[in-house]
Amino acid sequence: MTPPPSDPTPPIAHLERKARLLLWLVAAVITGFVLYVLVARGVFERNQQLVLISDDSEGVIVGMDLTFSGFPIGRVRRIELADDGKARMLIDVPVKDARWLRTSSIFTLERGMVGDTRIRAFSGILQDPPLPAGAERTLLRGDTAAEIPRLVASARALLENLDHMTGPESSLNTSLAHLSTVTERLTGHYGVLTGVLGSEGNAKKIITMLERSNALLAKADAQVFGPQGVMDSTQGALVSAKTALDSSNQAIKQLSTVLQDARQTLTKVDAVLAEAQAVGANARVASTDLGTLRAEVEASLRKVSQLVNEVNRKWPLARDAEIKLP
Image (cartoon, rainbow, N blue to C red; front, side, top):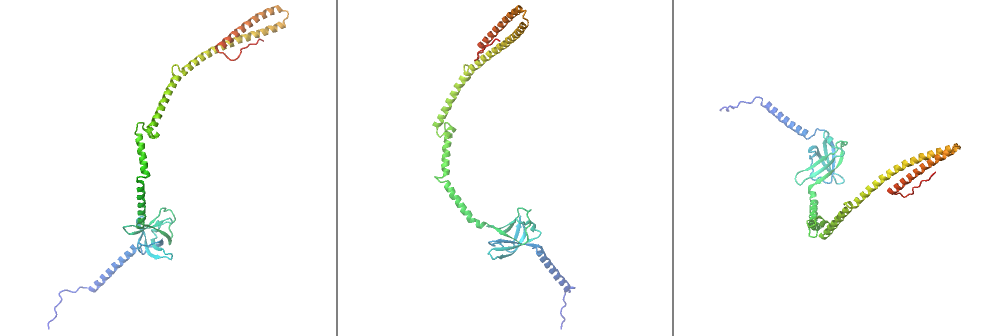
């Protein structure tokens, strides 16, 4: 009996211990990966709950993100049907991201023709109070596919209105025809007047009336401001009146001088009469003086009368000049 051949490969030292260490290492890597995934999914974060209510939850799945300004701040945890037939979406929002949600925030569910459904939050006024935990808000829907029938109906109505506007009997064509008529009138013989008045005949009447008015104005200008016009005659009369007025002023000054002399003479007469009454013995001398003074008074009165006549001749006044002797 022959002995078994010997194994050329030497045995690995501590093989069992190395295998056990490898198993522990693999388990640690798997555990670390699981923990990393849990942390990345926010399993260990402190969350607050938000409930969004919608008529339809089509397109919404568990794990969908709630975004704010393009950043995920929450995740759909559960979708349930309420007693009133509406869909309730329970969303977990991390406490550190809940500061972006306010009492005035609105939430929309957007479904495009191409692409996934998105739940978005909008906070216009960040100074409003924070949104409390467990708050319920209505989810506004923005379904592009649902808007297509309304857009088609609006486009059809728009095309019908455009067809009515461009028809042969439409108001637009009538307005364009009127505009063409007005343009032809504006480019006519009398230009804008023809367009405003409606015909060249009416425009010609207006131009004829304006020419006649200009002729009348020129004639009136010649009669009033011409060499032999009213203004020239009036200016001559004013010069004559001014000359007469100056002469009258000089005569009045002379009359004032004569009256001053007469006043002095009458003063002398009063003095002589007083002296005559006081001294009766010298009656002859007083009579002689009275004769002389009377002659002077009469001469002064004649001068006054001549000056008054001269004044009346140069500047006739509607009054009678009368001088009364004392």
